[in-house]
Each structure stands twice: as structure tokens, then as C-alpha cells.
Image (cartoon, one colour):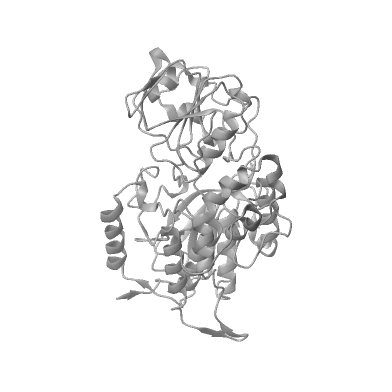
Length: 470
């Protein structure tokens, strides 16, 4: 049984002017049904996570004056208010022709794996036609549901700079605030004790800006994702050799380097010996610095009024249908919650679905059917963070599914003609091949050293699509 959104959606609040918030605004506008769209952005510019926020005062941001109770308190001490995990020398882990929005290629001459600066310029240009919707330096403090069966179902409390707070009402809300600003720490024996004993020695990638703090130090890096591989290579060029690297599972971006010694999963930190024990029983001592590249927690501090509450965001699955719609509140959506994905195109796929549902052209399943879908995924992947992990090719399958869902929308008419809305990218065999080859291409790109900035196409690295499905 299909479910129709309970009210006519005329007004939408979008939280965040990063890549997903910008895309959502464009897809909502294309429906020509929603008369009021406001994007609330904490910063003074667009870009979200791609903004670089230098840490004031010191390269090592974890120097608390007194011990903290938990490692997470140490790992977030002294972070800028609007910190992002951007660091000097960061480059995308996806080729730019894969990373780009469906209707906005990167400029000619962009290096194959775009620099952070390339991406910020790209997002600035992409935002031009929705900038009139953005209210900058506006922090959403609370999103409170009213009667979801009526218009103005949400009260949004906003603080603008130092001017106090005010409340605005909307029919629907999009949480596009990202999930890369708060560390997700692993359950490692001795981690809290280590952070209390050596607070200046514990780091997380959320605070990493450059490798200067690690010059001549004996460093243990924990984590196997793209950021862990990249940060590890930067630190290995500065630290005492070898860099000690622990990975539960080897990243597809992993390379064997002479200056890096690889270990299996980290089991325990032993502060009294300044040592680490790994899953194979081996122990390394005299460790000066520990760097955790272990991912990020979901945080929605503005949703405390939601019942049932969204709790344990760092480790538990969110109560969403298709990683988008809050099952109890279908006029509350979340864009880009999945991980291990192609972020810009996936945000477009989700935004296209949201726009069609809220314009009344595409029904949702019943609440019972949505809960059944979520329970089925939990039974397959578990109730934890893995629920949202769409490691390729799962991200490709998901985006194809969202595209196909969009094609089922009714065609609407207005005084200006037929409304078909805006469609996301259709993932053909070549695009899927490029997605699956991206890690190998990134390793070949990095192997070019300083000359990699001259590489603009994957053909220059010796790759060629030979046709056919992946």
C-alpha cells in the first residue's frame, strides 16, 4: 500500500550548504512546486566539509591541561567550532569525471584526482544559481515536530551570528549537515587510559592538518580507509621509520611501502609500556604518537525533540527508509548518510527522490513497508554502522535503484508546461567500471609523485575502458 506525504509541501528548510544541501536545493527547485526553500549554513560560504579550517595555536591540537575522562574528549579538545577534516595537500580519492555532479563537469585542466582547492572552486561555481536561498552564519539549534498531518509541521530554531535565536516554520526539513566533523573512536582496550596518560600523543584524522607534529617521532596509525592511506603516506615522509600501520581490513587504497610496517587489528594500548598489542599477538613499544583514522560519527544535535530519539548516532543505524526518509516523520529526510560512496552523484539520486515525493509525484510505501525494509537490511548487515556502508558495488546498485525509482514518478503539468523535474546520472557500464577502478587509479596517480598534478585523464595512467559490464 502506497503512502502519500500527509501535507502539501510548500516550504522546506535545508540544513547545510555543502555538496548535498546544494544538490537538494536544485532538485527541489526543478519540481516548480515548492514556493519557499531556505538553506541554513553555519559558515560564511558554501562547501561544507571541503572548507579548510586551520587549528589555531598549534599543529598538535590535543594538549589538554588536565586529564579527560574519555579519549573522545581528548580527540576533540581545542578543535575549531566549525572544524572539518580537510588537511594540507588533500586530494580527492575519486577521478573528477566520476566525482562530478551529473550536469556540471569539472573545468578543463583539472588534475585527475582534484585537489581540495579544485573542489572548493567547483562547489562555489555549482552553487551560483541557489545562493539566493542561503542564509549564512545561521546555525540550526533545534528542529521540533508539530502536527505532521498539517502544514508548517516543523519549527526550526536558528541562531544567526550573535543576534540571538528565532523560530521559523516549515512543511519539511532536509538534514544535509554531513557526518565528518566528529570522531568515531574504536573500542580498544587501554584507549582512555592512554589518552589520560599522554593526551598530547593521541590524534584523530578529524584534527589532522599536516605532518609537522610527527617529525622524528615513532608513530602508530590505525585505520584502513582512503584518508588513513593518504595521511599515512604524509606522516611516513616525516616520522621515524618505519611508520606502524594497523588495519583490520586492508584498504583498496593500500600500498606496500618500504617505510611503513603493517600490522593486523589493534587490540590494546598499554600506556605503562607506551606499547601497542595487535591481533597476531605482536607488541610494539616506545610509541610516541597514535593517530586514529577510524571514521566519523553521525551527529544531529538539533534533533533532540524527535521521538523516538536518534541515539548512539556513531554506532547505530538511523531510523531511515532507503537511507533517506525518517520512517516516523516522512517530511524529515537525510541526504548522504551512506558511507564508502561516490558522494556528489549519490546526493543527487537521493535529492531526486525527495523532490518527487514531496511534490506529490511519487508515493512512499506504507510505514509498515518502510519498517520491513529497514528490518530486512538490519538482518543482513546488523544493527550497527554497517547498515549505512555501501562499499562498491553496493553504492552503484543503490544509485541505480534510486534512479529507477525516480522514473516511476508521475508527470505533472503547470501553466509553463509539463514538469518532469531533474534527473540524476544514469550509471552505465563505463561509469561503473570507472568506479570500481578508482582505487587502482589513485595508487597509480600517487606513484607519479610531484608530476601527478599534470595528469588529467586516466588514459595517461595507462587505463582504458574496453567495453562491456563490470
